[in-house]
Amino acid sequence: MSPVVILQSMGGLGLFLFGMKVMSDSIENAAGAKLRGILERLTTNRFMGMLVGIFFTAAIQSSSACTVMVVSFVNSGLMTLYQAAGVIFGANIGTTVTSQLVSFNLSEYAPVFLLVGILIVMFSKNTAIKKWAMVLVGFGVLFLGLSTMSAAMSGIKNDERVMAILGSLQNPVLAIVVGALLTAIIESSSVTVSIILLLCKGGLMDIHICLFMILGCNIGACAPALLTGSQGKKDAKRAALIHLYFNIIGTIIMFVILSLFEDQIIYMLQAISGGDPGREIANAHTIFKIFQVAVLLPFSTPIVKLTYLTVRGKDEDGGYRAQYTLQYIGEKVVFSPATAVVDAILELERMGSLASENINRAMNALITLDKEDIDEVYEVEKNINFLNHAIVNYLVKVGQMNLPVDDRRQIGALFHVANDIERIGDHAENVADAARQREEKGVDFSKDAQREMGELLEMVNESIQYAMDCFAGNGNVDEKIAMVQELEDKIDAKERELQNRHVERLEKNECSPEAGMLFSDVISGLERVGDHATNIAFAIRDSEMEDMAVKQAAVRA
Image 1 (spheres, rainbow, N blue to C red):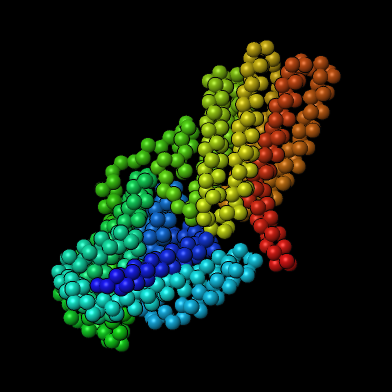
Image 2: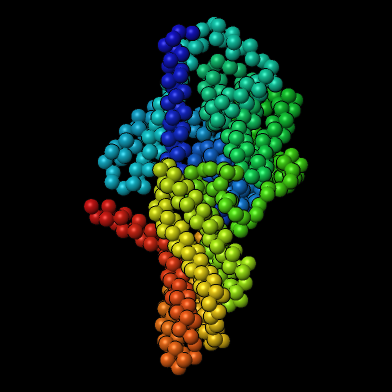
């Protein structure tokens, strides 16, 4: 084989891989957050999960990306293994869309896609439109690489040595192994199947052996998910194994069927593909996957149970009270840009639970003077500070990465939320300081003062709960934001009312000056906690409004 043909083949493959990555990444950046939302909400049963998996993978042109995202969701607790199974099954069908596109002769239109995409990227001021334009660029580069590889393969056909090597691959089992290894190296079954398609279309390989290589590609496609899952918790490992077991079992079934009815299957493929070898490979890939899903979807529950037999036991989990650990962005984390912000939000929710519980623990210690409670307030505050630093550092790193557009605009808001939660933790520590002072100086609170602090604390607790629900997007967010606003006004009014009553008690000599000072400081601190809760509730909404204003300004410009 001449050096020119080798370089042309390598260059074409490079362009094809680059185009595939640009197209996939651009779709994920432009619509990743919306697609992720669909993935989260519409996977209530196996059938719906399968449909979502088909749609999602067809949209982003990558079953590996879809499966890695599912593994990340399982690792974060956003999706159960039984939900994940349906999505993974569907992703195996969705990935066949790429080979279907490749099988059509679109290479002659590649320059048009490239030109249109590049012109939009160069001259458009709208960021969202630019993201979609990059999809066109990736599509154009992909087919440009395809055209280059096709041209190179026409030269390979004249090389007897290369043809002899390709022709020697006659063993079906060896073909499966080769297909699996190539796909594991390239990390994309879509790319490997597309190469096989070109080899078959160019007359370099016989369709008989190509069909078995496709089966191997399905197994090799599990490599990215297995690598990702190996870094995560046990459920993440199990999710990756669902993908592997589905493809191994499906391959065994198809191997038996192909071995028994190979001639009939090839005849059927030729009949429905108009005698086009490229279309035959693409249709075989799609039909094999649909058949495997149809056979194995009813057995998804046993497959999930099989993963529990493979990966035994549970992760050691101290819950949200675990000291100095990160549950969602820590060591056993499956990092995916598409779920990075979601994981940060979950970690902030956990941090918020710690802070909310600590303010109540501190208030209880203030009344009961329980030394264990006072000491625990300080310990939990150290944990909150640790989480704050760790989450902020994580957000800094994430902000430098290629995130979906909707996620990127939330980064600034998450910094503010982390700060507000940390400040709530500081106020809990201030209350614990007041408890110590009360114990050391023998200060007593009147029954009225205790009742009034309890009333204000109850309002603050309600505000924090609504605020965290707003931040996490739980329930009717607009309704809960309105409740937070209403509570903010009530808390401010209540604080002023209690300060006035406190002055009246001092004037009537119904409490000591020391008790009065502690009381005043505590209710002022609780009012500020209410302010921080309001900030948390509005953090994401304010970032959305700011983003909308920027877009409107860009349109006017």
